[in-house]
Image 1 (cartoon, rainbow, N blue to C red):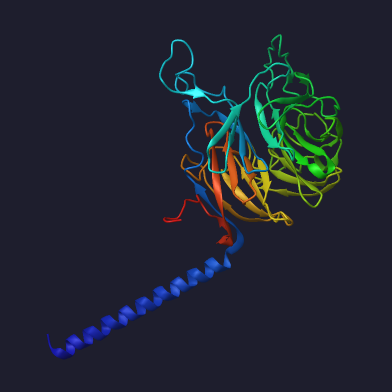
Image 2: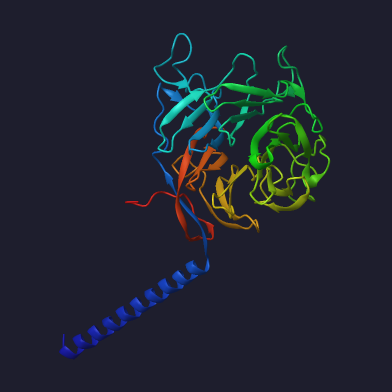
Length: 411
């Protein structure tokens, strides 16, 4: 090939390479600008796939239906230790045994911050009723443990569980599982205006300064109830928008219908904030309703309002900064945790997805935060586990979907 042809070819190739590099740089710059324009400042997390540590005694978890954190960042969970396939999951139970593994763990388990099991307890005992279907666990400012229940008696009824009744009480225990008291009577009928008992409680939360407990009441009743923490007496209650609660059947949720003027079952959380507000999970209505602690309605926010079935608003936890700037909202139907600005109720970002791997969920049910900003999630149905998401500081994260927050190599 003549020299001038080779030189011309080299010049052309160099020019093409230069244009390609320039185009790639421009594209990268455009993508970077797009990412910066579509990023937000929010808490950053990554899943800890090694938390908690393996359980002893061939223990396994059923539906993990509540999570709470005490003053020492010990994590409490409550699970249903009767939600197993007896043939396939708990072969070591019964006579004769089918296999060496496995055995249901006691209903309440306590883990230290490193994921070590500290203590396990719970279940039926002398002098109190245990819920037919425990639901929700919370630790108050005295490190006492409160548990609700959402079980319903069968339509046919039984002598100890009459038809039309269900779990209608709350249990309070010491930190190590000694009964303090039972608030309310077992197997009472639904009555959202009762001052004597509850109607299948989902969760209990606390305002220590006012000595009040807020009850999401819940799976039978359709209300928020407020207790005096010292006496256990119901002080006040209300329904959606602060209305007098009604037990009327509203039928299935319809995203195209006007907003329901009452809560649907379940009323799944009622969380008081540091500035005197109360955030209520109206789960199947796909909304958070915000109230003053007196019960006066303030505002509402619909979350993924096209979601039917189990609904989108399952549980919330606040960030642990003094202002509680962020809400972490568990959505067990769409399998996400939303990070929201608490004041505006706008979704800043979301993470997670449906699946079995760390950082994914099958029915993410409950959520709680510790003093370090880490968050913990539990899963019901066939999820049957707890996961820890480690707080990595406030930083730039994608607006919209982040996907599963796997640890970065070397982190």
